Image (tube, rainbow, N blue to C red; front, side, top):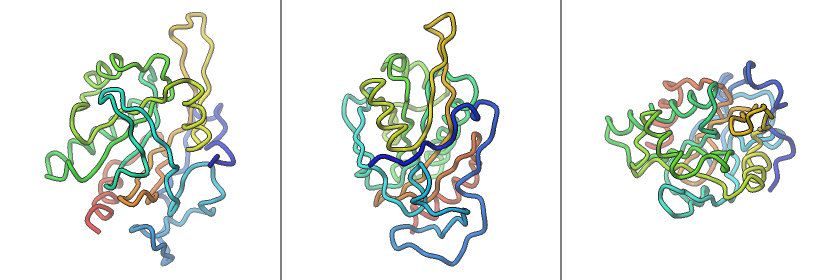
Length: 224
């Protein structure tokens, strides 16, 4: 499916903020496909660009270049955290990756490393090669060879647009500096908590997601 609109206007992203999918008071509304209650968003899930609370994750398969295999997102069969980034980003993306890394560290230290999957998806496949992703993992102190970490890389720029923007509603636009090798992106932020059945439990739209909130939500989802 194609999302009807991208997550937000691209030009508002670099220095702005976005509402978090976890804001609001939980209501008594329920959905049989999810563990966490309605997050109290002022909109219906089907009316926003991204897969929101109670919705099925898009049926997307992406290459995992560090593992030489493909990963079907909706068929992982364990809770997952999914975010979107590019490795040359100097603003939002390091924070998003650090958030997933902190969850990875907490999972390792507390004995549930095999109960969660961490999936950062690059929308810059031109530069985010296998070699680059390995060096980036070292820079960010990520255990990229751990069984719960999966860098995902669309096969082309066109495929990145089709998946990241059309399927997940995350807008990104390449800038055009004089040094073309150092181009950047303006982009929106999204981190998804998905349950083992492939349904979205929470959509965190903050540029700096709260790790404690994510860990609390994840614990409820994985122990349900």
